[in-house]
Length: 279
Image 1 (cartoon, rainbow, N blue to C red):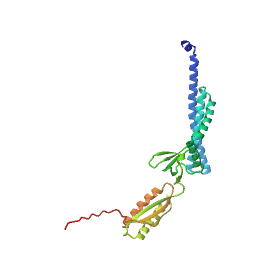
Image 2: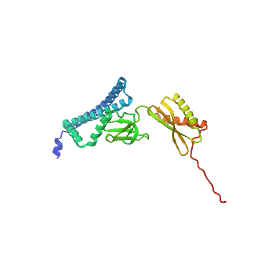
Image 3: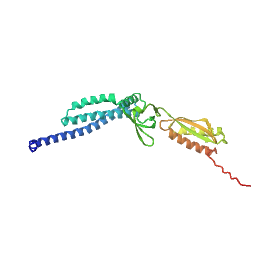
Image 4: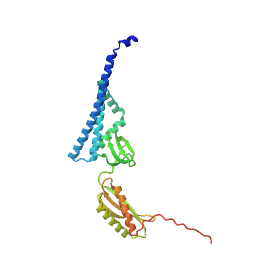
């Protein structure tokens, strides 16, 4: 054993280790430089594409993130191949192994294949884009990323949902075209309905002239229902995407103030106490 240690050329071994370590560090440095440059080139390319072809911002962000993910996967594969070559291993075996793994995925990982196929058609048919408000797989929220394997949705409470594409059997996209703002206001049975409608329509016309978020209406469509203690009058408007809730809040405030100013009661529950006294 001692003789075996004596026969080892420690100088050559240390020099080789130092060279391999230096090359590995250089490869790591080159990987991060290439990734930063590649991501910057991809971003600038899609920015130019948006200006030249007039693409929507959501569509550009969707394709940009997808391209960056694909670029990262290719870059990581090249990096691993280079590192293996630096330490004297056969890189061709890795490439052949990648083909075998791909074949195994095709036969065995059916869920992954289903994710990729579904993701491909989501992108191809432009069903959703980044920053769209959608309902998918029972989840409501804003799309943050559309990938070939998963779709990422940010819920309105801030939760980030990662949904495998195979679970998306249907998509409801709430961001295509103008959205509807709907407000129901109640008045008492003792009040004049025609007067209330006229006052509410006057308020709606004023808001429409002042608020650029409103694209159509608001219009008082009439009596929606007759409740146990109130008459429900409905107001409908068309607004820009994602502004329908803000417009509804504005309408409720202004309509309430107008009805109060004209002594039209908005009913609320009352409790009546009857005390029975013995004769």
